[in-house]
Length: 209
Image (cartoon, rainbow, N blue to C red; front, side, top):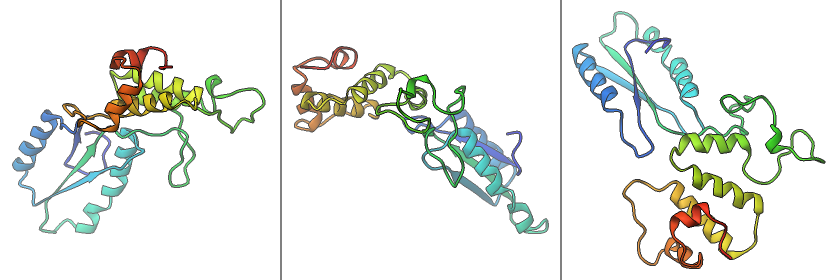
């Protein structure tokens, strides 16, 4: 990878289901064996990061290693950075840094997050536009769910059925491939309270009355 402070460096990407990019994995295993490494240093970022932020972190963290080890040291190190689909919340600052706008978004609040009578630093209740875009990027193929969650957050209904629907949708948003709910769980109860509607109707239709 270009731009990294150390060599050799490999990136390992994992998707939302925990599956590794097989080409990257195989390249790492093959090239690490060819270089006869004694140690492989692997760094995995935490939540609230983007790939760019994680790569910068790895670059700074790995940079002192060669000097600390010394040229004559017996260790032959390789470096790997793990990248997984962590979501960066645009309205949160980290380590004293100002919040970063979502990719392509102008600085500050946009029209969707302002309303008359509120100052520039106050957001209205609900899902702001930057977070909405970030959720769409982190959960591709589930935009209907994200859109319906945004509607429910904006409505802030006190109806039990709306709260149940919100819970069903959140579990659907973060569900793991191949997972199923056990009989008698809250998910099943929520479906029953949603007037027996199908999942697709719950996502795209009006909230149950």
